[in-house]
Length: 144
Image (cartoon, rainbow, N blue to C red; front, side, top):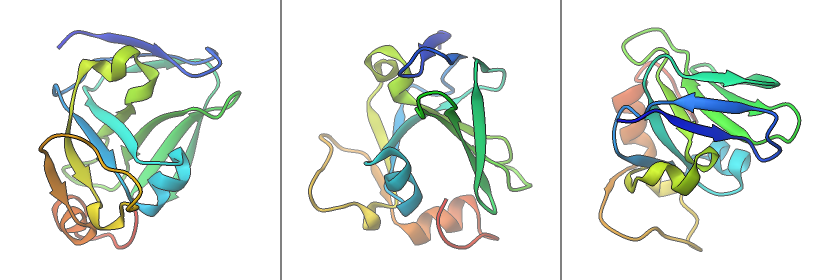
């Protein structure tokens, strides 16, 4: 996959990342909806991504942190901090990149938390809150 260049809304943070897969994910958990005011749409980034500028991180749960631009507040990424196989996995905000990294949504997480007012087109794998926690963080409870 090619390396992508992106930026936050105000341009203070620039991001370089390589998608691990040609696929986007959308998360409807309570935290992602509050953070993005909708679903958090992202792609898994290969290790070695870079962000330059005023980046801040926020520990949002016992098992994850979120990054944002300190100037404009744009969401940058979601990273798993829980020890284990998933540690360090980073979901890069698709909106930082032109045309949402030219990918389609292939996975929807916390589908049982999705508001009824919107839906995405096409077929994709959909996982409930219980399925997400069982698959990605069996030791953790609650939201991402």
